[in-house]
Picture 1 (cartoon, rainbow, N blue to C red):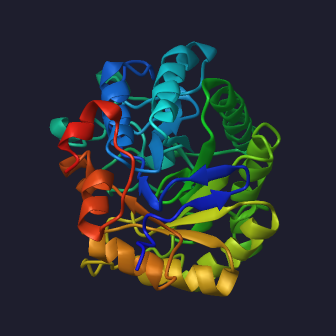
Picture 2: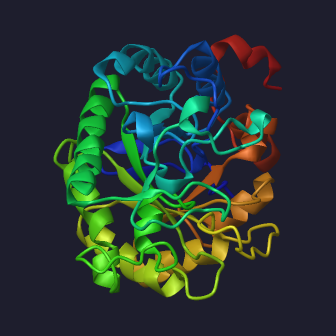
Length: 355
Protein backbone atom coordinates (compact mmCIF):
# COMPACT_ATOMS: atom_id res chain seq x y z
CA UNK A 1 0.00 0.00 0.00
CA UNK A 2 1.30 3.44 -0.91
CA UNK A 3 2.18 5.80 1.92
CA UNK A 4 -0.52 8.38 2.63
CA UNK A 5 2.00 10.62 4.37
CA UNK A 6 3.75 10.98 1.03
CA UNK A 7 0.62 11.68 -0.97
CA UNK A 8 0.30 15.23 -2.33
CA UNK A 9 -2.00 17.79 -0.76
CA UNK A 10 -3.47 20.52 -2.92
CA UNK A 11 -4.65 23.70 -1.22
CA UNK A 12 -5.95 26.27 -3.68
CA UNK A 13 -3.23 26.79 -6.30
CA UNK A 14 -0.44 25.18 -4.26
CA UNK A 15 0.35 21.47 -4.23
CA UNK A 16 2.44 20.16 -1.34
CA UNK A 17 4.47 17.14 -2.44
CA UNK A 18 3.75 15.38 0.86
CA UNK A 19 1.92 15.86 4.17
CA UNK A 20 5.05 16.74 6.17
CA UNK A 21 5.37 20.33 7.34
CA UNK A 22 8.00 21.99 9.47
CA UNK A 23 6.41 23.92 12.31
CA UNK A 24 7.41 27.54 12.85
CA UNK A 25 10.13 27.45 15.50
CA UNK A 26 11.83 30.54 16.90
CA UNK A 27 15.58 30.54 16.39
CA UNK A 28 16.33 33.65 18.47
CA UNK A 29 19.07 34.52 16.00
CA UNK A 30 17.92 37.73 14.30
CA UNK A 31 19.09 41.30 14.85
CA UNK A 32 16.51 44.08 14.62
CA UNK A 33 14.21 41.58 12.92
CA UNK A 34 16.65 40.81 10.10
CA UNK A 35 17.18 37.25 8.87
CA UNK A 36 20.73 36.06 8.31
CA UNK A 37 22.59 32.97 7.14
CA UNK A 38 21.47 30.96 10.17
CA UNK A 39 17.86 31.25 9.01
CA UNK A 40 18.82 30.42 5.42
CA UNK A 41 20.67 27.26 6.46
CA UNK A 42 18.11 26.23 9.11
CA UNK A 43 15.08 26.57 6.84
CA UNK A 44 16.90 25.53 3.70
CA UNK A 45 18.19 22.31 5.22
CA UNK A 46 14.64 21.23 6.08
CA UNK A 47 13.73 21.80 2.44
CA UNK A 48 16.62 19.66 1.21
CA UNK A 49 15.58 17.17 3.92
CA UNK A 50 12.35 16.34 2.16
CA UNK A 51 9.55 18.23 3.95
CA UNK A 52 6.75 19.52 1.72
CA UNK A 53 6.05 22.75 3.60
CA UNK A 54 8.52 24.86 5.57
CA UNK A 55 6.87 27.47 7.82
CA UNK A 56 9.17 30.21 9.03
CA UNK A 57 9.19 31.04 12.73
CA UNK A 58 6.78 33.49 14.35
CA UNK A 59 7.66 36.66 12.46
CA UNK A 60 6.79 39.84 14.28
CA UNK A 61 4.54 42.39 12.61
CA UNK A 62 6.06 45.23 14.68
CA UNK A 63 9.08 45.66 16.98
CA UNK A 64 6.85 45.41 20.07
CA UNK A 65 5.27 42.23 18.66
CA UNK A 66 8.49 40.24 19.09
CA UNK A 67 8.79 37.60 21.78
CA UNK A 68 12.46 38.42 22.23
CA UNK A 69 14.87 41.02 20.80
CA UNK A 70 16.25 38.24 18.58
CA UNK A 71 13.02 37.36 16.74
CA UNK A 72 12.52 37.74 13.01
CA UNK A 73 10.39 40.66 11.89
CA UNK A 74 8.54 41.92 8.84
CA UNK A 75 7.64 45.43 9.93
CA UNK A 76 9.98 47.05 7.41
CA UNK A 77 10.52 46.74 3.67
CA UNK A 78 14.21 46.38 4.49
CA UNK A 79 13.52 42.92 5.94
CA UNK A 80 12.40 41.58 2.56
CA UNK A 81 15.75 41.23 0.77
CA UNK A 82 17.20 38.37 2.85
CA UNK A 83 13.83 36.64 3.14
CA UNK A 84 13.62 36.54 -0.67
CA UNK A 85 16.84 34.53 -0.74
CA UNK A 86 15.38 32.07 1.76
CA UNK A 87 12.10 31.55 -0.08
CA UNK A 88 13.89 31.20 -3.41
CA UNK A 89 16.09 28.43 -2.04
CA UNK A 90 13.21 26.60 -0.36
CA UNK A 91 11.23 26.66 -3.58
CA UNK A 92 14.23 25.45 -5.58
CA UNK A 93 14.17 22.24 -3.53
CA UNK A 94 10.58 21.40 -4.41
CA UNK A 95 9.25 22.56 -1.05
CA UNK A 96 6.83 25.40 -0.34
CA UNK A 97 7.89 28.40 1.74
CA UNK A 98 5.44 29.54 4.39
CA UNK A 99 5.54 32.29 6.98
CA UNK A 100 3.80 32.70 10.34
CA UNK A 101 2.86 36.28 11.23
CA UNK A 102 2.61 36.95 14.93
CA UNK A 103 2.25 39.37 17.82
CA UNK A 104 3.39 38.18 21.23
CA UNK A 105 1.19 40.53 23.26
CA UNK A 106 1.85 40.22 26.99
CA UNK A 107 4.40 37.44 26.38
CA UNK A 108 6.69 39.84 24.52
CA UNK A 109 9.94 41.40 25.73
CA UNK A 110 11.70 38.34 27.14
CA UNK A 111 15.27 37.14 26.76
CA UNK A 112 16.27 34.24 24.52
CA UNK A 113 15.94 30.75 26.08
CA UNK A 114 19.67 30.43 26.66
CA UNK A 115 19.45 33.65 28.69
CA UNK A 116 16.61 32.30 30.80
CA UNK A 117 13.41 33.50 29.08
CA UNK A 118 13.36 36.36 31.55
CA UNK A 119 11.17 39.43 31.22
CA UNK A 120 13.29 42.34 30.01
CA UNK A 121 12.84 45.79 31.47
CA UNK A 122 13.19 48.72 29.11
CA UNK A 123 16.67 49.49 30.48
CA UNK A 124 17.63 45.88 29.61
CA UNK A 125 16.63 46.16 25.97
CA UNK A 126 12.97 45.35 26.57
CA UNK A 127 9.85 47.33 25.72
CA UNK A 128 6.30 48.07 26.80
CA UNK A 129 4.00 45.10 26.26
CA UNK A 130 0.35 45.11 25.24
CA UNK A 131 -2.61 42.80 25.84
CA UNK A 132 -6.41 42.84 25.69
CA UNK A 133 -6.49 43.41 29.45
CA UNK A 134 -3.93 44.55 31.99
CA UNK A 135 -3.19 41.05 33.30
CA UNK A 136 0.39 39.80 33.46
CA UNK A 137 1.52 36.27 32.58
CA UNK A 138 3.43 35.86 35.85
CA UNK A 139 2.43 37.63 39.06
CA UNK A 140 5.87 39.17 39.56
CA UNK A 141 6.02 40.72 36.08
CA UNK A 142 5.28 44.24 34.97
CA UNK A 143 1.63 44.46 33.95
CA UNK A 144 0.99 44.86 30.21
CA UNK A 145 -0.93 47.85 28.91
CA UNK A 146 -4.48 47.14 27.77
CA UNK A 147 -4.84 48.01 24.09
CA UNK A 148 -7.13 50.91 23.37
CA UNK A 149 -9.07 51.28 20.12
CA UNK A 150 -6.18 53.03 18.38
CA UNK A 151 -3.79 50.33 19.57
CA UNK A 152 -6.03 47.59 18.23
CA UNK A 153 -6.25 49.30 14.86
CA UNK A 154 -2.46 49.66 14.76
CA UNK A 155 -2.00 45.90 15.30
CA UNK A 156 -4.54 45.10 12.59
CA UNK A 157 -2.75 47.42 10.17
CA UNK A 158 0.63 45.94 11.14
CA UNK A 159 -0.63 42.49 10.14
CA UNK A 160 -1.95 43.92 6.87
CA UNK A 161 1.38 45.51 5.94
CA UNK A 162 3.35 42.43 6.98
CA UNK A 163 1.15 40.29 4.73
CA UNK A 164 1.87 42.67 1.85
CA UNK A 165 5.61 42.27 2.45
CA UNK A 166 5.27 38.48 2.73
CA UNK A 167 3.89 38.38 -0.81
CA UNK A 168 6.81 40.42 -2.11
CA UNK A 169 9.27 38.17 -0.23
CA UNK A 170 7.96 35.12 -2.10
CA UNK A 171 6.04 33.15 0.53
CA UNK A 172 3.30 30.93 -0.85
CA UNK A 173 1.61 30.00 2.44
CA UNK A 174 0.73 32.41 5.23
CA UNK A 175 -0.21 31.40 8.76
CA UNK A 176 -1.76 33.75 11.31
CA UNK A 177 -0.58 32.88 14.82
CA UNK A 178 -3.58 32.67 17.12
CA UNK A 179 -2.14 30.14 19.59
CA UNK A 180 0.29 29.62 22.47
CA UNK A 181 -0.81 32.54 24.60
CA UNK A 182 0.19 35.25 22.17
CA UNK A 183 -1.93 38.30 21.42
CA UNK A 184 -4.75 36.79 19.33
CA UNK A 185 -5.08 33.91 21.79
CA UNK A 186 -5.16 36.43 24.64
CA UNK A 187 -8.22 38.03 23.04
CA UNK A 188 -9.89 34.66 22.47
CA UNK A 189 -9.69 33.40 26.05
CA UNK A 190 -11.80 34.76 28.93
CA UNK A 191 -8.86 34.07 31.24
CA UNK A 192 -6.88 36.91 29.64
CA UNK A 193 -9.66 38.99 28.11
CA UNK A 194 -11.82 40.77 30.68
CA UNK A 195 -12.76 43.67 28.42
CA UNK A 196 -16.25 45.14 28.54
CA UNK A 197 -16.24 46.67 25.06
CA UNK A 198 -16.98 45.01 21.70
CA UNK A 199 -13.78 42.92 21.98
CA UNK A 200 -14.63 41.22 25.28
CA UNK A 201 -17.26 39.15 27.04
CA UNK A 202 -19.20 36.98 24.59
CA UNK A 203 -17.65 34.45 22.21
CA UNK A 204 -18.60 36.70 19.29
CA UNK A 205 -16.79 39.63 20.87
CA UNK A 206 -13.68 37.66 21.85
CA UNK A 207 -13.18 36.35 18.29
CA UNK A 208 -13.72 39.80 16.75
CA UNK A 209 -10.03 40.81 16.88
CA UNK A 210 -8.93 37.60 15.14
CA UNK A 211 -11.55 38.05 12.41
CA UNK A 212 -10.53 41.68 11.84
CA UNK A 213 -6.90 40.64 11.49
CA UNK A 214 -7.94 37.91 9.08
CA UNK A 215 -9.84 40.40 6.94
CA UNK A 216 -6.86 42.77 6.90
CA UNK A 217 -4.46 40.00 5.89
CA UNK A 218 -6.85 38.81 3.17
CA UNK A 219 -6.89 42.30 1.68
CA UNK A 220 -3.20 41.78 0.80
CA UNK A 221 -2.76 38.01 0.53
CA UNK A 222 -3.53 36.56 -2.92
CA UNK A 223 -6.84 34.66 -2.94
CA UNK A 224 -5.27 31.73 -4.79
CA UNK A 225 -2.64 31.09 -2.07
CA UNK A 226 -3.26 29.05 1.11
CA UNK A 227 -4.11 30.86 4.32
CA UNK A 228 -3.71 29.04 7.64
CA UNK A 229 -4.54 29.91 11.23
CA UNK A 230 -2.81 28.29 14.20
CA UNK A 231 -4.94 27.99 17.31
CA UNK A 232 -4.61 26.51 20.76
CA UNK A 233 -7.60 24.17 20.88
CA UNK A 234 -7.75 24.41 24.67
CA UNK A 235 -6.09 26.41 27.44
CA UNK A 236 -5.84 23.27 29.61
CA UNK A 237 -7.19 25.48 32.39
CA UNK A 238 -10.58 25.81 34.06
CA UNK A 239 -12.94 28.39 32.53
CA UNK A 240 -10.55 28.99 29.64
CA UNK A 241 -10.82 28.69 25.87
CA UNK A 242 -11.92 25.17 25.00
CA UNK A 243 -12.35 22.63 22.20
CA UNK A 244 -16.02 23.47 21.59
CA UNK A 245 -15.15 27.13 21.03
CA UNK A 246 -12.29 26.06 18.77
CA UNK A 247 -14.72 24.10 16.63
CA UNK A 248 -17.07 27.08 16.36
CA UNK A 249 -14.23 29.45 15.51
CA UNK A 250 -12.93 27.02 12.89
CA UNK A 251 -16.35 26.88 11.23
CA UNK A 252 -16.37 30.67 10.99
CA UNK A 253 -12.77 30.82 9.73
CA UNK A 254 -13.58 28.29 7.01
CA UNK A 255 -16.63 30.31 5.98
CA UNK A 256 -14.42 33.39 5.72
CA UNK A 257 -11.83 31.71 3.50
CA UNK A 258 -9.26 30.09 5.78
CA UNK A 259 -7.95 26.85 4.27
CA UNK A 260 -6.45 24.93 7.18
CA UNK A 261 -6.38 25.08 10.98
CA UNK A 262 -3.00 24.29 12.51
CA UNK A 263 -4.15 22.71 15.79
CA UNK A 264 -1.95 23.12 18.85
CA UNK A 265 -2.91 23.80 22.47
CA UNK A 266 -1.95 25.59 25.67
CA UNK A 267 0.54 28.35 26.30
CA UNK A 268 -1.86 30.95 27.68
CA UNK A 269 -1.53 30.69 31.45
CA UNK A 270 1.24 29.50 33.73
CA UNK A 271 -1.13 27.28 35.73
CA UNK A 272 -2.10 25.12 32.73
CA UNK A 273 -2.18 21.36 33.26
CA UNK A 274 -1.18 19.56 30.05
CA UNK A 275 -1.33 15.73 29.92
CA UNK A 276 1.74 15.30 27.72
CA UNK A 277 2.12 12.12 25.71
CA UNK A 278 2.53 10.95 22.10
CA UNK A 279 -0.20 12.39 19.84
CA UNK A 280 -1.77 14.24 22.80
CA UNK A 281 -3.09 17.04 20.56
CA UNK A 282 -4.18 14.89 17.62
CA UNK A 283 -7.75 14.37 18.96
CA UNK A 284 -8.32 18.13 18.73
CA UNK A 285 -7.21 18.17 15.09
CA UNK A 286 -9.54 15.26 14.40
CA UNK A 287 -12.48 16.87 16.20
CA UNK A 288 -12.07 20.17 14.37
CA UNK A 289 -11.64 18.38 11.02
CA UNK A 290 -14.82 16.36 11.52
CA UNK A 291 -17.05 18.98 13.12
CA UNK A 292 -15.86 22.03 11.18
CA UNK A 293 -15.19 20.19 7.89
CA UNK A 294 -11.97 22.12 7.40
CA UNK A 295 -8.48 20.83 6.67
CA UNK A 296 -6.38 20.45 9.82
CA UNK A 297 -2.76 20.04 10.76
CA UNK A 298 -1.69 17.89 13.71
CA UNK A 299 1.29 18.69 15.91
CA UNK A 300 2.76 17.71 19.28
CA UNK A 301 5.01 14.78 20.29
CA UNK A 302 4.72 13.18 16.87
CA UNK A 303 8.16 11.71 16.42
CA UNK A 304 8.00 8.66 14.15
CA UNK A 305 7.09 7.98 10.55
CA UNK A 306 4.47 5.42 11.56
CA UNK A 307 2.74 7.87 13.91
CA UNK A 308 2.50 10.40 11.11
CA UNK A 309 1.41 7.80 8.56
CA UNK A 310 -1.36 6.57 10.86
CA UNK A 311 -2.64 10.11 11.49
CA UNK A 312 -2.99 10.80 7.77
CA UNK A 313 -4.20 7.32 6.76
CA UNK A 314 -6.93 7.33 9.43
CA UNK A 315 -8.15 10.79 8.40
CA UNK A 316 -7.44 12.41 11.76
CA UNK A 317 -5.65 15.31 10.05
CA UNK A 318 -4.52 16.38 6.59
CA UNK A 319 -1.03 17.57 7.46
CA UNK A 320 1.48 16.64 10.17
CA UNK A 321 3.73 19.36 11.52
CA UNK A 322 7.06 18.55 13.11
CA UNK A 323 8.94 20.82 15.49
CA UNK A 324 11.53 19.35 17.85
CA UNK A 325 11.83 16.12 15.88
CA UNK A 326 12.83 18.20 12.85
CA UNK A 327 15.44 19.97 14.96
CA UNK A 328 16.89 16.58 15.82
CA UNK A 329 16.72 15.46 12.20
CA UNK A 330 16.76 17.97 9.33
CA UNK A 331 16.39 15.05 6.87
CA UNK A 332 13.20 13.84 8.49
CA UNK A 333 11.28 13.76 5.21
CA UNK A 334 13.89 11.64 3.43
CA UNK A 335 14.27 9.25 6.38
CA UNK A 336 10.51 8.82 6.79
CA UNK A 337 10.16 8.05 3.07
CA UNK A 338 12.73 5.28 3.34
CA UNK A 339 11.05 3.85 6.45
CA UNK A 340 7.62 3.86 4.79
CA UNK A 341 8.84 2.57 1.44
CA UNK A 342 7.99 5.75 -0.46
CA UNK A 343 10.16 6.57 -3.46
CA UNK A 344 10.83 10.30 -3.30
CA UNK A 345 13.17 12.57 -5.17
CA UNK A 346 16.36 13.43 -3.31
CA UNK A 347 18.49 16.50 -3.96
CA UNK A 348 20.84 15.59 -6.82
CA UNK A 349 23.81 16.37 -4.60
CA UNK A 350 22.68 13.67 -2.14
CA UNK A 351 21.40 10.99 -4.52
CA UNK A 352 24.41 8.72 -4.08
CA UNK A 353 23.35 8.25 -0.43
CA UNK A 354 19.77 7.30 -1.28
CA UNK A 355 20.23 3.51 -1.33
